[in-house]
Image (cartoon, rainbow, N blue to C red; front, side, top):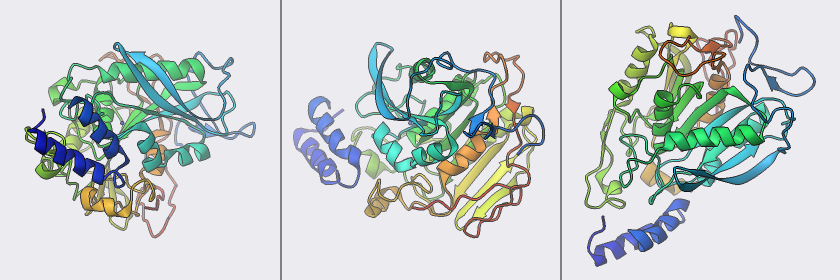
Length: 402
């Protein structure tokens, strides 16, 4: 995988030199030295009855009623596929042993659970809305997720879907969660992985929210047993996962795989078209959010009340919209491109996710009933205007900072 010794040394020095720019690059350099992520029908999603924010569920986990879990953040080790794996578990301060939703938030290629936790700033949303978040760590060297076209190229047989299943089961045994309210999101390679989970873990994942990551699984291999609610975020100037599809930046790619051309990725349009068709949605989207350079369009009329929403960031880079301004220095935009202030992906994803839960008894079979919908997305009657945002169908605010 490596070039001649002098080229290898040069690349290591480059990675070390930008370690202040990307926290993961210092670790990568060391690794290369060694071895070459409203209610119109039915009950509301959440209530404050009894003082705390709680969510209705048909599937409380085994820890409910006996959980000793306490609010806070910790790293948990598990075994999966013969490998020692880990994840960061964040339990909000309002957790009181009642079933809480679970969001799985996966990092990008070369990154880590801790960096994704900092960059996405989802803990803040979880603390406000009383849901649990896990940030799993990828595997391999460089750290990655095996999500089809991105980005595990050394061990494509590794089963990361099984690992995420293990994470869900492990959390369910220690923490009272709503097993029908488990959602998947992720950045870049983690976004690809959330797409993969929508394809191959539809009996456990109620909805997905990829950020800067397209469908990496061959369409013919993506056969979920039901309509999958999808909310995707992507910048039109993304240099690593191009909005219009095609190869990643060869210059950036060569630092990791110098003798291998960059992979070809599906376009955002093809990804959304796949999910729209798979879910049986209408052909014409409705604009549901507009603020600054962020615009969201939603395809509705899908099976079982699911929708497919695409939030496009005009001129946006390979970033987490509305993410932490301190997780990465501003000069990182020279590589990743700019991060928008016009929408907060973490907040908007939660507003989207909480409208969905798995139907009672769903087992992932192709004859299963469509997903249970607590309320339509966007929520009816929510015409909030945050920072000048407009939401024709009540898409909410979301003026998250950069």
